[in-house]
Structure formats: C-alpha cells, structure tokens
Image 1 (cartoon, helix red, strand yellow):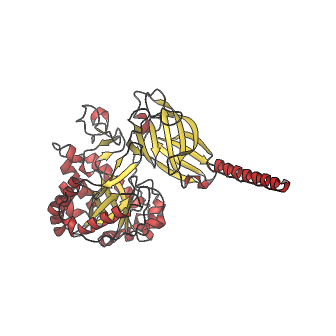
Image 2: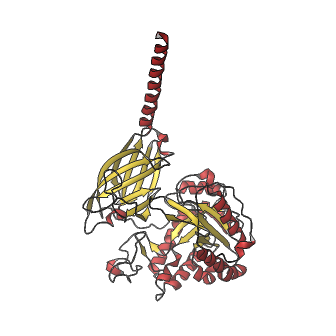
Length: 474
C-alpha cells in the first residue's frame, strides 16, 4: 500500500510539473508588449512577442481609441475603440457599441523584424475622425487571437500624434541615374511576354517571393512590395505590374491651390461646394483626369514605378470615376491619360481594373482588363468574419452579357488579356474549381485570393470549359 501511494504521489508531481511547464511555455509564447510613436505622417505601432514564432499562426488586431471621441467598439477590454487594424486593413467602427460593425477606410503596412511586428498607419486616417484639432492622444490595444477568435495575448500603449507637422513630400522627378537603362532591356519585351501569360496573381503584401515566382505575372502594391523584391521577381522572369490609382487621390494636397477650398485643381466639389469630394469608404478624394496637373502627377507616379522601382507595367485602378461625374469631361480626360501613359511608356504593360465603357476607345493602348469579384465575392458577418460566397444570379448574368456583348467584340479587333479576380478561402476547393471553370469558359485568366490580398495561394487548380456558363443562370 505504501509503495502504491508513493507511486501515485510521484505521478501526481510529474503531472503537475508537465502541466506547469506547458502553462509556462504558453505564457511565454503569448507574452506581448507594445510601443507606439509618430514617424513622419504615420502612427507606428511596435508589437513585440517573447518568441519570433508567436505571430505566425496568430491573428493580429490593433484597436485604437482617440481622445475626445464618443462611442466606439466596447466588445474588447479597455474599450471603446474607434479604429481597428486587421490584416493590414484599417477599419472605422460604425455599429452598436458592443457589436462588430466596421467599415474599411484605408490600408496599413507592416513588416516583421525578428520577434517584433511593425505596423504603420497613416495619421490622416485617424485625424479624419476629429474636427479642428492638431493633436490627438490615442490609447492602443494590441491583441493576438487564435483561429477560433479566442484572445491569446494583449498589450497596451499610448501615443500623442501631431497633424500637419510633417507635410507630405512632393513626388520627385526620376533622376538620370535611376537604373532606367538597366531595366530598359527587360522592359522592352514585357508586352510581348504578357501577351503569352497563362496565369497571374494579385497581391498587396510585401513578401512571398518564392510563391509569386510561380506565376507569369503579378499585380503588386507599392510601397508594401519593396523595389528590391520587384527587381528580384523581374530577374526571375515574372511580369510585375505596379498599382496606380488614376481616379482617386489618397490625400489632400495644396498643389496649385486652384481647386475647392484652396486645394489642387484636380479635385471635384459636387458634394459640397468649396470642399473636395471624398470617397467615404476609403477617405480618398475623387480626381478629375481632365485636369492636366493631375494627369502630369499620374505620369510621374508611373515613371517612379517603372524606372525607379523596376515594374514591368501598370495596373490602373479607380478608372470608373468618370461615371460619378457624367456631366464633366472626366471621361475624355481618362481616355487622354491612358493615351499619355502609352505614349510616355511605349513598352510598359498597361492593365485596367474595370473601365468597360471606355474599352473601345482605349483598347489599342492597353494590354489587359480585369473583372473583379467575377464569380466569387464576400460579405461581412455580424461576428466580424468574412463570408465568401457565389455572386448572385443577376451579377453572374450581368458579367456574362458584358463579356459576350461588349468585351468580346473589342477583343476580336484588339487582342488582350481578360483577367478574373475572385475571393475565397484556400480550402473552398469546390467553389474555386467552379470559378476556374467559369473563367476558362468565358476566356479569362483566373486568380483567387483573400479579400485583403495579403496572402499568396498556390492552389494548382485548372479550369475546364463548361457549356452551362455560356448561358444565363437562374
């Protein structure tokens, strides 16, 4: 009996040691600390974990409370919080206090340095919530969550931000020694190579070069993707397209001061006279392509992407702004800008996101056009997660008719690549295969990504044409 009791006691102590060790290791892995400070026009948040691997399998959220603001999300300890950064997307809280109601207002950038995650958030996104203030005090909560959305670690910090102290620098003209000559040989054949691509991807992150190298062409976002990595992909034979918004400006600048409110002349002021028109979803500002100063600025942006950063081409976004201003000359200006880009950069690949109504006019000057959320889209759920789903029957029928009646006649005269971008999770194999089959049926190259465009999928899915996608769905 004594021996049995000793054995039980020994097992008990051994079990206690094992459990204590596991708890200690879990506490060590999940320990966080946070710091925040202003760097130029950005709020920089540094989250440091006890081990470098702590961020790999975790979902990172940065919740921000702005002093003197009322309301916000109270579902996290220490709330309310008005701003959240998750997967490099910046959100503003618009729902009930305890509810998960967020809408996108911009994009943050992040990089990992050892066991520290560095996230930069444009202070303009935070000051858009304030009125007539030059400083705001922010209270910040950083937390990690597991795949089941359970909080595993938290850290808190504060920061005082000053607005207007660091003006946005002007876009410099490319210098004579910006490596343009070294890139020109590869650029000269980019359009011919793009015409032969069999796959592509769209990624707005800053790494995953080995996975991106598996694609013939990639659409990337600067400055998230460094010029070094762009040139590395270029050397690997990948066609790289740099993101360029031609219908919206990400910030307000004075420029020539001839526009609404004393800002640059290219801003519209139809929403409120004397104030630049704003896209409330992204806190960007609609720009008039018929303004020569705006077109000149876009050409300079393009020059930096192509000659300084080493991109093979341009991905033109926000092309459809002219639809919001039908009684202006913005549509004609958009067509003119695309023509100026082609004339200035004759060897660069140019791909449009949408812009179908001006396709007959610009088709001779471009190399491709994208249909976003072609077959698969997403919707926000009450718990904050994204639900990926098949597009509605009416939307599928609209895109079918668009290709059949409007795009196909243009392609017969001016061959170009038709790109389809769909959103899904990598384990939704059935839906992804269906989207790939529909894209193959309608003559599109298919790419599937998360809505944040922050991961590179390697799905190895091959689309097969199906007769049913040639007809309207019910």
